[in-house]
Image 1: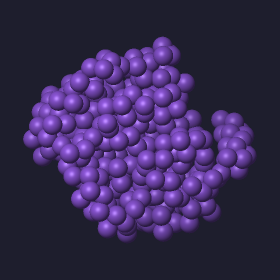
Image 2: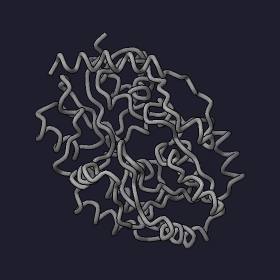
Image 3: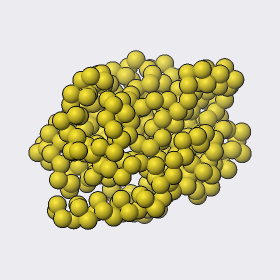
Length: 323
């Protein structure tokens, strides 16, 4: 296992060096460039999920650990709500420690992997916004009250499918209380042309970037800061991040399928539908009146009270630095 991981490390570093691109100034509306395969992470951390969305970059920056230092731990991919699911990267790599969102995830991961798990809350808490507070306020004043849409997104090797016409009808019902609709698309969905469908409705379409763009989390934070409320048609980590930043969520439930049946079955296995049903129930108000109830419910799964100060997180992470 260690040999295979070492070979994987070297391959990843070679690949990263080929596609590295700083891209620090791409704004959220620049869909063409944001959906291109770039990688601006320094090739350091061994575990693949650590580089996704800039997780390791932002956590290291928050506690003032140099970007090229290796964290000898795995950072869980996002806010998994399943009781019996752990991602492959938290299992196969020779690290003994996993960072996750909540005490709930700590219990699940430790039971299934026997690894030490440290809950640190939603990672977006540690990311800088992509622009200044002044720019956020200027945009918010210009945009007015903004409804943010997080459509169910595609995954590697499989495109998400849902009734877009029906979803748009629901968005148009909800948007009557808003001045602007902003749709945040995953980079894969930009590539397959979904932006044009939403743009035809007069919505502004934005993107947080490619999966290995270290500024992804910063852009996503900016996008959420520009919004006043969020509508989704399926579960994703975006729900956790929205509630973390005090944005109420309306869950319009639709059937989501995937073009690759193997990946679709994988997605079904990773969900715990008891929790999903609870989320749908407390997020069924299209007037967004349940934020406090949503945050209280979400704290158990997403660990809002597990967010660390710079000092306390530094005490946890600095002993995990390999060199």
